[in-house]
Image (cartoon, rainbow, N blue to C red; front, side):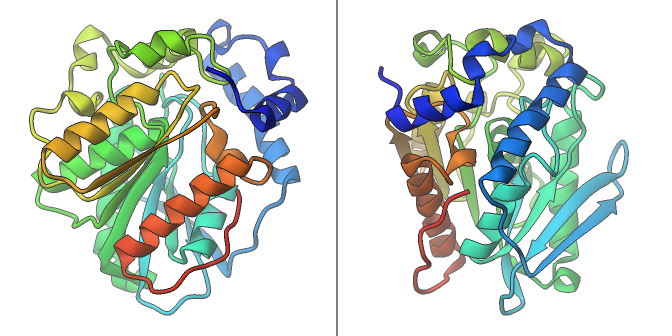
Length: 321
């Protein structure tokens, strides 16, 4: 399958082909290198938000940093709880700051970005525990935060999409918090890595089969964890009564098929789900909407589904991240 020319030009400009494979690096070295992509995104422009506040809340293993983005919007406002990507090993509040700013402004809604514990220092299920605890905290403190507790969604990209899906399971099974929507951006849903797209897109770009193995080996403690639905939500026996979802996938992504399989399995269980594949796009393209036409469309589609889920009338101008 052919990579979109805009995406190829972007990857060439970033020098991705010349980078050492992440599976040859230590987690700390990989985290340091990721700052290169952060700087590249910043040069594409960062949106101002009416209020940005850094908080720390009590978590199950350590304090959880949260960054709260509040646009100039009537309160109580809807909210999106966002979990960043990075294979459960890299990423933080800064790596997805530009995405959260754009989402906050263009929905508009409050965005709570969650800095869950990373592996291998904190292995599965630490990230899950932090993500659910942060979701509970946002819902419990909704009034103080200017949030409408009846209009809270979860979302995330890649590993963050995995966590958003898993948090939705936990919220259902533990009778709360009430969630309105799931925004699942090329989510990882099956740690067995058995879908055809794993082999079709084994050489990436940006995410490869080998790097996925590296991420999973750092995140999980062993083979048994791969079968745990809190790691592999596709393997859950019951996907009914989950929040409606928008599942966004990229054609040239190893995770493409498992994201789409998860969406179809939710549909078969009676959950309203829209699944959309973006042609010629690699893993990670959502973060580069400022320079990718398809990225801008994916962002517009995502904000439109959130607006619908939140019952927000009207439209806003298309924007990129």
